[in-house]
Length: 130
Image (cartoon, rainbow, N blue to C red; front, side, top):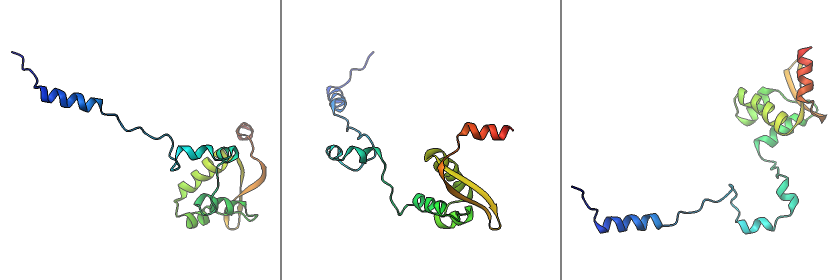
């Protein structure tokens, strides 16, 4: 014997299925979509750098002629040592493509950004193989 569904249940299910789902906004921007057209094209292609971020502070320390140590970056950012090394390798070298050099000194290993283009990964591999 088959039980028949009551008409109230089937009507409630049909209404629930037909209710429109809220549309997800594309991107994480808090700006409305209509304001994005008012921006000039150069502002959309180049990200704006804020001076009060940890990234900006670390890059400022690395751009100084004296350079900086991992310990100094750790105190300024409250990051752990492995996070600082990951930032130097992933963001400074790979993402930004800056020429990061490290030198041994009396203070320990000092990192700084040297002017000029970063050495290519292929050239680094050739140096390591030799």
